[in-house]
Amino acid sequence: MTDDPPFSPALLPAGFVDLLTPDARTEARGVATLMDVFASHGYDSVRPPLMEFEETYLAGAGVALAEQCFRVMDPDTRRMMVLRPDITPQIARMAATRVAGSPRPLRVSYAGPCVVVAPVAAEESSRQIMQTGIELIGPDSPEADAEVMSIGAEALMRLGVKDVSFDLTMPPFIPALLEEAGVPAAQRPALMRALDRKDAAAVAQHGGALAATLIALLDATGAAEHTVAQLAELTLPPKARIVLDRLIDTVAAVREICPALRMTVDPVEFRGWKYHTGVCVTLFAVGRSEELGRGGRYLCNDNEPACGLTLRPDVLFRMIPPTPARARVYLAADASRQEAAALRSQGYATVRGFASGAQAEAEARHLGCGIILSGTQRVDLA
Image 1 (cartoon, helix red, strand yellow):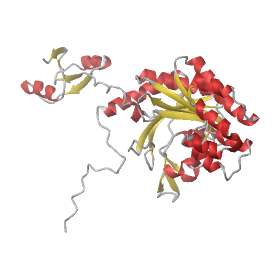
Image 2 (cartoon, one colour):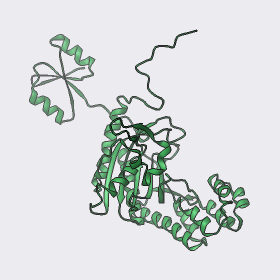
Image 3 (cartoon, rainbow, N blue to C red):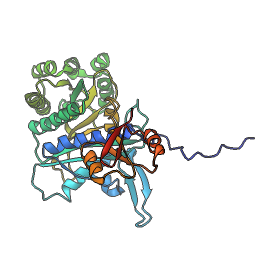
Image 4 (cartoon, rainbow, N blue to C red):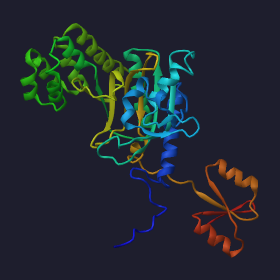
């Protein structure tokens, strides 16, 4: 029989990590860059709380996220609370309550940590994730969807993330098509599984009179212009046609703003974030499997239309070079306060020294300083 090893204070729960320099520095400056882009387009920053009461968060758009929520009891009110797994439902709540009377269109941006029960993607292990994004509340149009996507593209370009693909889908389309075409409810699960797997043979087996149309939709998946041309030729029931035309119009609106943006369209993809009600987009970098972000159209808690895009900083910042540290200046005991302030305004980091004489240079080197400021004089260390 052996004793358990002593518990290490460095041990953390699975899926949670300490983020150290330079990663923490890269994240902080990267988030600031993203938020600056959002602000330049009129998106004002908001900061929802990390925790909310269960019945508040798991209402409206949040109801679809119940399985991803950690729950704790509030020792004060004895009511259950949840740690947010996603910020968008909180924006939907705020739009319907705290800022219900604000002028529309309402443009907000946000950045903050979220906690999920399980990693959001199969290839990831993190349960604490960062989110930053924008929400456009009020207008329901292809132009509004295009605004959100184009700002996301600009933000990634400013960050230095290259070869990004915007993959557009319309999750409500397939359910609407099957309903309008009168496909029996008993047949739909098998047909939906076949479409999800992109299995044309199974679609032909279960699709009945709709099989040819569904296979044509499968074949249309690809680069946006190719897909739009194929979709325009299809004969569809009236309501399904309207739903699909919204996707086509959104592609045209995005292309108007971002002519060179890499876009693909998958008309048979019906998986969204469950609360999405219209055009959705998922962002990938060519050659990488992680999602860089996702978003789409949804309804706020009072059924007001909205669309948004959420980016994943913890994924994005693995794709760009680490943010370099500021050059460090060692302040000797007699260093001029005015000169030190001037150096900080020029982008240097000043480090107050506690050694003197010959030991000052040794301490400066030990602390990674390349310059010593003594009085008003700067001495470069070779």
